[in-house]
Image (cartoon, rainbow, N blue to C red; front, side, top):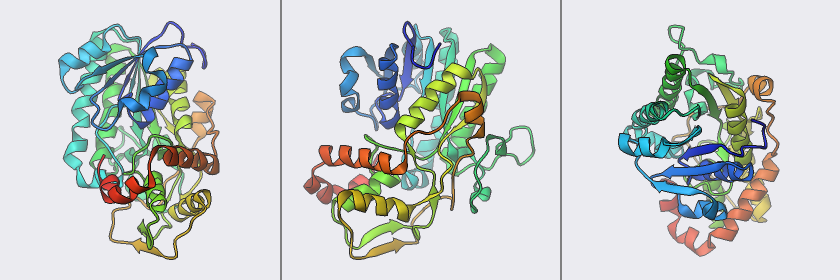
Length: 341
Protein backbone atom coordinates (compact mmCIF):
# COMPACT_ATOMS: atom_id res chain seq x y z
CA UNK A 1 0.00 0.00 0.00
CA UNK A 2 1.57 3.30 -1.06
CA UNK A 3 1.32 6.55 0.83
CA UNK A 4 -1.15 8.10 -1.63
CA UNK A 5 -3.15 5.08 -2.73
CA UNK A 6 -5.79 3.44 -0.52
CA UNK A 7 -8.01 2.35 -3.40
CA UNK A 8 -9.95 -0.82 -2.65
CA UNK A 9 -9.30 -0.54 1.09
CA UNK A 10 -12.31 -0.66 3.42
CA UNK A 11 -11.46 1.63 6.33
CA UNK A 12 -13.18 2.37 9.63
CA UNK A 13 -12.36 5.60 11.46
CA UNK A 14 -13.70 5.50 15.01
CA UNK A 15 -14.30 9.01 16.30
CA UNK A 16 -14.27 10.04 12.65
CA UNK A 17 -16.57 13.04 13.19
CA UNK A 18 -14.11 14.52 15.67
CA UNK A 19 -11.48 17.20 15.13
CA UNK A 20 -8.58 14.93 14.12
CA UNK A 21 -10.81 12.13 12.86
CA UNK A 22 -12.63 14.27 10.30
CA UNK A 23 -9.36 15.47 8.78
CA UNK A 24 -8.14 11.87 8.58
CA UNK A 25 -11.40 10.85 6.86
CA UNK A 26 -10.87 13.55 4.23
CA UNK A 27 -7.30 12.36 3.63
CA UNK A 28 -8.41 8.74 3.25
CA UNK A 29 -11.22 9.62 0.84
CA UNK A 30 -8.75 11.63 -1.25
CA UNK A 31 -6.48 8.56 -1.31
CA UNK A 32 -9.32 6.41 -2.66
CA UNK A 33 -10.39 4.51 0.47
CA UNK A 34 -13.92 3.29 1.10
CA UNK A 35 -14.51 4.94 4.50
CA UNK A 36 -16.95 4.21 7.30
CA UNK A 37 -17.14 6.60 10.27
CA UNK A 38 -18.28 5.34 13.68
CA UNK A 39 -19.02 8.06 16.22
CA UNK A 40 -21.41 8.68 19.11
CA UNK A 41 -21.34 12.45 18.40
CA UNK A 42 -20.59 13.31 22.03
CA UNK A 43 -18.01 15.78 20.80
CA UNK A 44 -17.75 15.23 17.04
CA UNK A 45 -20.32 16.68 14.65
CA UNK A 46 -21.71 15.78 11.23
CA UNK A 47 -20.75 19.30 10.15
CA UNK A 48 -17.09 18.29 10.43
CA UNK A 49 -17.70 15.77 7.62
CA UNK A 50 -19.49 18.15 5.25
CA UNK A 51 -16.78 18.05 2.57
CA UNK A 52 -17.01 14.26 2.14
CA UNK A 53 -20.43 13.36 3.55
CA UNK A 54 -21.76 12.01 0.24
CA UNK A 55 -18.70 9.78 -0.20
CA UNK A 56 -18.64 7.98 3.16
CA UNK A 57 -20.80 5.84 5.43
CA UNK A 58 -21.58 7.25 8.88
CA UNK A 59 -22.91 5.15 11.76
CA UNK A 60 -24.05 6.62 15.08
CA UNK A 61 -22.94 4.02 17.64
CA UNK A 62 -21.67 3.51 21.19
CA UNK A 63 -18.47 1.53 20.71
CA UNK A 64 -18.47 0.52 24.37
CA UNK A 65 -21.39 -1.74 23.36
CA UNK A 66 -20.00 -4.96 21.87
CA UNK A 67 -22.83 -5.33 19.37
CA UNK A 68 -22.23 -1.81 18.03
CA UNK A 69 -18.48 -2.42 17.82
CA UNK A 70 -19.00 -5.68 15.94
CA UNK A 71 -21.35 -4.00 13.48
CA UNK A 72 -18.94 -1.09 12.96
CA UNK A 73 -15.92 -3.33 12.25
CA UNK A 74 -17.73 -5.79 9.96
CA UNK A 75 -16.28 -5.92 6.44
CA UNK A 76 -13.36 -3.63 7.36
CA UNK A 77 -9.69 -4.03 6.35
CA UNK A 78 -8.12 -1.24 8.43
CA UNK A 79 -9.32 0.39 11.65
CA UNK A 80 -8.04 3.81 12.66
CA UNK A 81 -9.07 3.96 16.31
CA UNK A 82 -9.40 7.59 17.40
CA UNK A 83 -12.60 7.41 19.47
CA UNK A 84 -12.02 8.48 23.07
CA UNK A 85 -13.53 10.51 25.86
CA UNK A 86 -11.15 13.43 26.16
CA UNK A 87 -10.75 17.19 26.10
CA UNK A 88 -8.23 19.84 27.00
CA UNK A 89 -6.28 20.10 30.25
CA UNK A 90 -9.24 21.37 32.21
CA UNK A 91 -11.43 18.51 31.00
CA UNK A 92 -9.01 15.66 31.74
CA UNK A 93 -8.29 17.15 35.17
CA UNK A 94 -11.96 17.52 36.09
CA UNK A 95 -13.41 14.36 34.53
CA UNK A 96 -11.03 11.48 35.31
CA UNK A 97 -13.80 8.86 35.47
CA UNK A 98 -14.98 9.84 31.98
CA UNK A 99 -11.44 9.41 30.68
CA UNK A 100 -11.12 6.03 32.43
CA UNK A 101 -13.92 4.63 30.26
CA UNK A 102 -11.46 4.70 27.34
CA UNK A 103 -9.90 1.49 28.69
CA UNK A 104 -13.14 -0.42 28.12
CA UNK A 105 -13.73 1.28 24.77
CA UNK A 106 -10.28 0.37 23.40
CA UNK A 107 -10.50 -3.30 24.34
CA UNK A 108 -13.99 -3.73 22.89
CA UNK A 109 -12.92 -2.16 19.59
CA UNK A 110 -9.76 -4.30 19.38
CA UNK A 111 -11.62 -7.48 20.27
CA UNK A 112 -14.38 -6.78 17.76
CA UNK A 113 -11.87 -6.01 15.03
CA UNK A 114 -10.10 -9.34 15.60
CA UNK A 115 -13.37 -11.26 15.62
CA UNK A 116 -14.29 -9.68 12.27
CA UNK A 117 -10.95 -10.48 10.65
CA UNK A 118 -9.70 -6.89 10.37
CA UNK A 119 -6.17 -6.88 8.93
CA UNK A 120 -4.69 -3.86 10.72
CA UNK A 121 -5.37 -1.40 13.54
CA UNK A 122 -3.78 2.03 13.89
CA UNK A 123 -4.29 3.44 17.40
CA UNK A 124 -4.19 7.15 18.17
CA UNK A 125 -2.39 7.29 21.49
CA UNK A 126 -1.11 10.41 23.25
CA UNK A 127 1.95 12.20 24.56
CA UNK A 128 0.14 11.95 27.92
CA UNK A 129 1.54 8.40 28.13
CA UNK A 130 5.00 9.81 28.94
CA UNK A 131 6.26 10.05 32.53
CA UNK A 132 5.38 13.43 33.98
CA UNK A 133 8.49 13.75 36.13
CA UNK A 134 10.80 13.97 33.09
CA UNK A 135 8.81 16.86 31.59
CA UNK A 136 9.88 19.61 33.98
CA UNK A 137 12.94 20.41 31.86
CA UNK A 138 13.28 20.78 28.10
CA UNK A 139 13.91 17.14 27.30
CA UNK A 140 12.56 15.72 24.04
CA UNK A 141 10.52 12.59 24.63
CA UNK A 142 11.71 9.33 23.06
CA UNK A 143 9.38 6.38 22.70
CA UNK A 144 11.62 4.19 24.85
CA UNK A 145 11.12 6.51 27.82
CA UNK A 146 7.96 4.45 28.42
CA UNK A 147 8.64 0.81 29.28
CA UNK A 148 6.38 -2.12 30.09
CA UNK A 149 9.38 -4.32 30.85
CA UNK A 150 11.13 -2.31 33.57
CA UNK A 151 9.89 -1.74 37.09
CA UNK A 152 8.81 1.87 37.36
CA UNK A 153 8.91 2.26 33.58
CA UNK A 154 5.55 4.03 33.36
CA UNK A 155 4.29 7.18 35.06
CA UNK A 156 1.58 8.62 32.81
CA UNK A 157 -0.10 12.03 32.85
CA UNK A 158 -3.41 11.83 34.77
CA UNK A 159 -6.10 9.20 34.21
CA UNK A 160 -6.35 10.06 30.52
CA UNK A 161 -2.66 9.28 30.02
CA UNK A 162 -2.91 6.00 31.95
CA UNK A 163 -5.92 4.96 29.87
CA UNK A 164 -4.05 5.66 26.63
CA UNK A 165 -1.06 3.73 27.93
CA UNK A 166 -3.29 0.76 28.75
CA UNK A 167 -4.74 1.03 25.24
CA UNK A 168 -1.21 0.71 23.86
CA UNK A 169 -0.49 -2.31 26.04
CA UNK A 170 -3.77 -3.94 25.04
CA UNK A 171 -3.08 -3.48 21.33
CA UNK A 172 0.40 -4.97 21.79
CA UNK A 173 -1.23 -8.00 23.40
CA UNK A 174 -3.73 -8.39 20.54
CA UNK A 175 -0.88 -8.13 18.02
CA UNK A 176 1.11 -10.77 19.91
CA UNK A 177 -1.75 -13.23 20.33
CA UNK A 178 -3.62 -12.78 17.04
CA UNK A 179 -0.84 -11.56 14.72
CA UNK A 180 -2.94 -8.60 13.59
CA UNK A 181 -0.93 -5.75 12.04
CA UNK A 182 -0.85 -2.94 14.61
CA UNK A 183 0.58 0.55 14.87
CA UNK A 184 0.54 3.11 17.67
CA UNK A 185 0.91 6.85 17.12
CA UNK A 186 1.55 9.10 20.12
CA UNK A 187 -0.16 12.36 19.20
CA UNK A 188 1.51 15.51 20.52
CA UNK A 189 -0.63 18.60 21.12
CA UNK A 190 -2.60 18.68 17.88
CA UNK A 191 -4.38 21.85 16.80
CA UNK A 192 -6.12 23.24 13.75
CA UNK A 193 -9.53 23.84 12.16
CA UNK A 194 -12.50 22.10 13.86
CA UNK A 195 -10.79 21.82 17.24
CA UNK A 196 -12.98 22.99 20.12
CA UNK A 197 -12.28 25.71 22.65
CA UNK A 198 -11.29 23.38 25.51
CA UNK A 199 -7.85 22.99 23.88
CA UNK A 200 -5.06 25.50 24.29
CA UNK A 201 -4.68 27.19 20.91
CA UNK A 202 -8.40 27.49 20.13
CA UNK A 203 -9.06 28.59 23.73
CA UNK A 204 -6.54 31.41 23.32
CA UNK A 205 -8.00 32.23 19.92
CA UNK A 206 -11.56 32.38 21.31
CA UNK A 207 -10.51 34.74 24.10
CA UNK A 208 -8.70 37.01 21.67
CA UNK A 209 -11.56 36.95 19.15
CA UNK A 210 -13.95 37.91 21.96
CA UNK A 211 -11.65 40.77 22.92
CA UNK A 212 -11.00 39.53 26.46
CA UNK A 213 -9.01 42.19 28.31
CA UNK A 214 -7.31 41.59 30.69
CA UNK A 215 -6.42 38.51 28.64
CA UNK A 216 -6.42 35.40 30.83
CA UNK A 217 -3.62 32.87 30.43
CA UNK A 218 -3.50 29.71 32.53
CA UNK A 219 -0.17 29.43 34.33
CA UNK A 220 2.68 31.87 33.80
CA UNK A 221 2.60 31.45 30.01
CA UNK A 222 6.13 30.05 29.86
CA UNK A 223 5.03 26.41 29.88
CA UNK A 224 5.78 24.88 26.47
CA UNK A 225 4.27 22.37 24.07
CA UNK A 226 5.25 21.20 20.61
CA UNK A 227 2.05 22.32 18.90
CA UNK A 228 1.52 20.09 15.85
CA UNK A 229 -0.82 20.98 13.01
CA UNK A 230 -3.62 18.47 12.43
CA UNK A 231 -2.66 17.61 8.84
CA UNK A 232 0.77 16.49 10.07
CA UNK A 233 -0.93 14.27 12.66
CA UNK A 234 -3.22 12.60 10.11
CA UNK A 235 -0.31 11.99 7.75
CA UNK A 236 1.60 10.28 10.56
CA UNK A 237 -1.40 8.04 11.31
CA UNK A 238 -1.62 6.93 7.68
CA UNK A 239 2.13 6.38 7.39
CA UNK A 240 2.13 4.30 10.58
CA UNK A 241 -0.67 2.09 9.25
CA UNK A 242 1.31 1.59 6.05
CA UNK A 243 4.73 0.95 7.57
CA UNK A 244 4.41 -0.48 11.11
CA UNK A 245 2.94 -3.92 11.84
CA UNK A 246 4.32 -4.89 15.27
CA UNK A 247 2.69 -2.20 17.48
CA UNK A 248 5.92 -0.24 17.88
CA UNK A 249 4.89 3.21 19.22
CA UNK A 250 5.87 6.22 17.12
CA UNK A 251 5.73 9.92 18.02
CA UNK A 252 3.74 12.34 15.85
CA UNK A 253 4.86 15.80 16.83
CA UNK A 254 7.38 18.55 16.32
CA UNK A 255 10.65 18.89 18.21
CA UNK A 256 9.95 22.56 19.01
CA UNK A 257 9.31 23.89 22.51
CA UNK A 258 6.73 26.65 21.97
CA UNK A 259 5.51 28.68 24.94
CA UNK A 260 1.90 29.65 25.53
CA UNK A 261 3.03 33.29 25.44
CA UNK A 262 4.48 32.75 21.95
CA UNK A 263 1.20 31.20 20.77
CA UNK A 264 -0.78 34.12 22.20
CA UNK A 265 1.51 36.59 20.42
CA UNK A 266 1.06 34.74 17.10
CA UNK A 267 -2.73 34.81 17.49
CA UNK A 268 -2.74 38.52 18.38
CA UNK A 269 -0.64 39.24 15.28
CA UNK A 270 -2.96 37.21 13.04
CA UNK A 271 -6.06 38.98 14.43
CA UNK A 272 -4.33 42.39 14.40
CA UNK A 273 -5.40 42.89 18.02
CA UNK A 274 -3.64 42.93 21.37
CA UNK A 275 -4.93 43.23 24.94
CA UNK A 276 -3.81 46.07 27.16
CA UNK A 277 -3.12 43.62 29.98
CA UNK A 278 -2.49 39.91 30.57
CA UNK A 279 -3.82 38.10 33.63
CA UNK A 280 -1.70 35.04 34.45
CA UNK A 281 -3.85 32.55 36.36
CA UNK A 282 -1.30 30.44 38.21
CA UNK A 283 -3.96 28.52 40.15
CA UNK A 284 -5.27 26.79 36.99
CA UNK A 285 -4.22 23.27 35.87
CA UNK A 286 -1.51 23.46 33.22
CA UNK A 287 -0.08 19.94 33.15
CA UNK A 288 3.63 19.30 32.69
CA UNK A 289 6.08 22.17 32.33
CA UNK A 290 7.62 21.28 28.97
CA UNK A 291 6.72 18.79 26.23
CA UNK A 292 8.20 18.13 22.80
CA UNK A 293 8.81 15.01 20.72
CA UNK A 294 12.01 13.29 19.73
CA UNK A 295 11.30 12.68 16.03
CA UNK A 296 14.05 10.11 15.38
CA UNK A 297 11.91 6.96 15.29
CA UNK A 298 9.21 8.56 13.12
CA UNK A 299 11.90 9.71 10.71
CA UNK A 300 13.43 6.23 10.59
CA UNK A 301 10.27 4.09 10.38
CA UNK A 302 7.84 6.43 8.60
CA UNK A 303 10.06 8.92 6.77
CA UNK A 304 7.91 11.44 8.62
CA UNK A 305 8.72 15.09 9.28
CA UNK A 306 6.09 17.70 10.23
CA UNK A 307 5.52 20.05 7.30
CA UNK A 308 3.56 22.93 8.85
CA UNK A 309 5.16 25.77 10.80
CA UNK A 310 3.37 27.33 13.78
CA UNK A 311 2.76 30.47 11.73
CA UNK A 312 1.12 28.52 8.88
CA UNK A 313 -0.98 26.46 11.27
CA UNK A 314 -2.14 29.46 13.30
CA UNK A 315 -3.08 31.35 10.13
CA UNK A 316 -5.19 28.43 8.86
CA UNK A 317 -6.83 27.99 12.27
CA UNK A 318 -7.66 31.68 12.64
CA UNK A 319 -9.13 31.76 9.11
CA UNK A 320 -11.37 28.79 9.89
CA UNK A 321 -12.43 30.12 13.29
CA UNK A 322 -13.35 33.62 12.17
CA UNK A 323 -15.28 32.23 9.18
CA UNK A 324 -17.29 29.80 11.31
CA UNK A 325 -17.87 31.66 14.59
CA UNK A 326 -19.58 34.99 15.07
CA UNK A 327 -17.70 37.30 17.40
CA UNK A 328 -20.91 38.06 19.29
CA UNK A 329 -21.63 34.36 19.84
CA UNK A 330 -18.13 33.69 21.16
CA UNK A 331 -18.27 36.72 23.44
CA UNK A 332 -21.67 35.71 24.86
CA UNK A 333 -20.77 32.03 25.36
CA UNK A 334 -17.06 32.20 26.10
CA UNK A 335 -17.01 30.53 29.52
CA UNK A 336 -19.20 27.65 28.35
CA UNK A 337 -17.09 27.13 25.23
CA UNK A 338 -13.88 27.01 27.27
CA UNK A 339 -15.10 24.32 29.66
CA UNK A 340 -17.46 22.04 27.74
CA UNK A 341 -16.46 19.43 25.17
